[in-house]
Image (cartoon, rainbow, N blue to C red; front, side, top):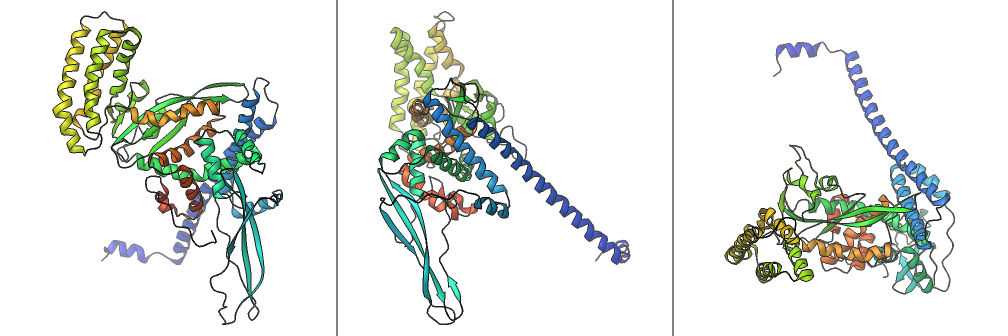
Length: 528
């Protein structure tokens, strides 16, 4: 029951007052709509500007400092970036505007008649009309898509029969299945081949162009670049979901490797970095996420981990296994626990022994060897057994190593290579030995370094990343392909299946396509 004063107040509300309230709500709704439109327009303007810059870089005069290989890679990067920006602009524009632009697209050239063709028929399951009469087939629509299996091109002929009921003039035709590239020429198999070849086998598009021409059908690298750009945009939500799951894990590895990035207009490159974050070898979730950045600044790590956070959302607060790079230090002041890399400490003594036959280094390597002997024995056991073995066998060895290093340090002059190697271990003793009290922690950072190692091969074939957007696109695709690889999946089969299922996958179930959850879906009976 309302208080009397309130009841009296409500009793005085007139019809004019109610009209005023409705007008106020309409004004607020109008302001919200205008704000949303202004935001979308700002994003479209930003992408349109980026599109214009990319076109100017592609079609304006080029510096003569580029080699033919560099110019080829720059052109394919710009084509890919242009396609990616166009896809993002298209997603923000109203549907009506998209239809107008579709009519302006150039007519596609027919596929060569000599290529083998495989017909895939799409017919309604029931050809009896609702009135009870049998429908008659009056024609069909045919769409051809270019398919590829290693070394062989084929053509898929999608035949969609048209069925009509002469009684009630009803037309029935199976709808076109959605495709990751709307109205695109390539099948998901061909797109997967291009992505795997470029980002896992390290074949630039100009080399793939030559391979496809030998297979019987020339595909311009500008066309391949457009496909890569559009696929990169479509796959980004999947990698965002993978990163979110990664940040729910209590222990992560982190490392970074340099990649040259082109400075457009200068004919030179500068050093960018590909950051890598992954779960440990003990975690049943196997995942790696790459993040491309234009520098080695620690702000990139903090941004990925969501640091500094807020009281409501504090950011990632787990244990991070890293080397001694200073870019990670700020994270440890914001709630992240540092876990050191014993392999880095060992490596400094190994260099002394390999280069100078140091007796101190030789003895230190024996101590490290005992710790790694234990790790090999407990690599495949459960957490409790691993922890018990470390406390019983590794703890005494680690204590002996620490005491021995302190004694040796008193005998060695400052500034020598041996002193620097010893100081590295002594100064990081707490972080280096944290694994002894936690069976979830690895002894070193080698697991993530093994994930980055294939990138070194890629560098010799990429030459450089053509732009920041190109580097981030490479990180997106490589995150999925390498995560699929460490989960034991065949990367081509994974990428092909994901590209086929992605257009119909609800956003709420996007995690079903993540590599550590993925399983090949049984194909429907479509004549395949």
